[in-house]
Image (cartoon, rainbow, N blue to C red; front, side, top):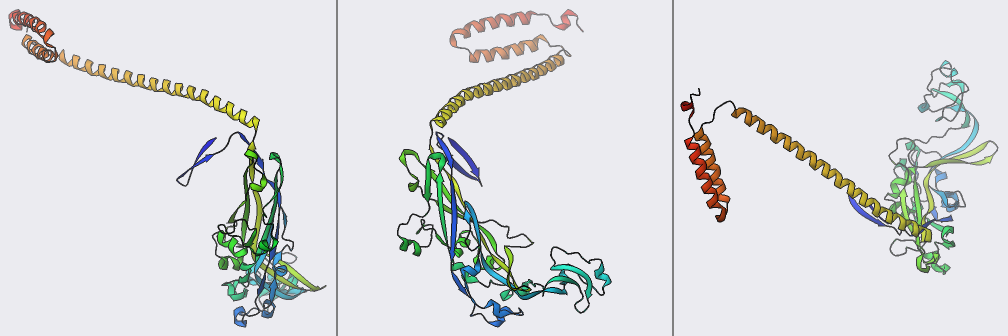
Length: 422
């Protein structure tokens, strides 16, 4: 089966073996992240006016930064690796002023009574109906102090991510697949039998295409993004393990090599809540916690593709479709031929009507005047000269004799004056 696609001005010719049946891939994907990062060397001025800057200075391992800890499992799985933080330490349940950005400005309690018992999606608690005149905002009941996630409260004032070293973290992608429709039930993307070599390889499309271990920074780079820019607010990326296998001529699943594709799937130009973030809290006791707002890279991993194998019924169906196509082709040609003939006949009929109208107009004009015999003679002579020029030598003598007799008869014809015509 041949299919022609025209995409972006380019011609693509896709050839499919119509005698094969398609077998969707089935399987599971599991991931494991390893890596360490340190922010102990950062200076106090790198954090500006951020309170509790010491909380940001530490050694981070993959357990601190990866969520969920087990990395996710299934045919479509995902995980998040943290790259930036806003930490609000020692929150306790109580009452505190809301931020003004939530339209909670007030000058007295009367400005806040109408909000009593309500909350807003972008707020930090439930309004109590009181006004905190010192700060000029309504009071809320919740975890205090409230989180301040403004751009100025990010490390490096949001110009770079706290954990740039995450780009060196590695992720092992293990994929076990099968093609039940084609009779193959077990296969995997890990083909190395030497565990030592596997633990030291890093995937590269050219030099190490079979290695299932990837650097986080490479996944971002191969998705045509800059890691330093993405890591500040996070982003969502997708890794596809593509299996396209041909099982004809005794080929097995071990002979089929998967390929990988990388892309960013979130809209980085979206104006609200750009990137990817979430929150979690470390509870120290019943009424005290530390809140973390995490910006990170969400990496989705999926196994896709199909296997193809010869199938007798598919071959019969394709053969029948091909025969039917030839029959339809003859009908189409006959139809087009009939249409062309019809258009041609309509065109010829219109030309005949147009010619007759012209001739009728010339005949009507000629009746308005009398034609003298001498005009007839001159016209006849000119016509005979034309005939003589195009005739062969054998018929020219006979034509000239006939023309001389005709001229004599015309000259002998009486003129209008002789006959008394006006």
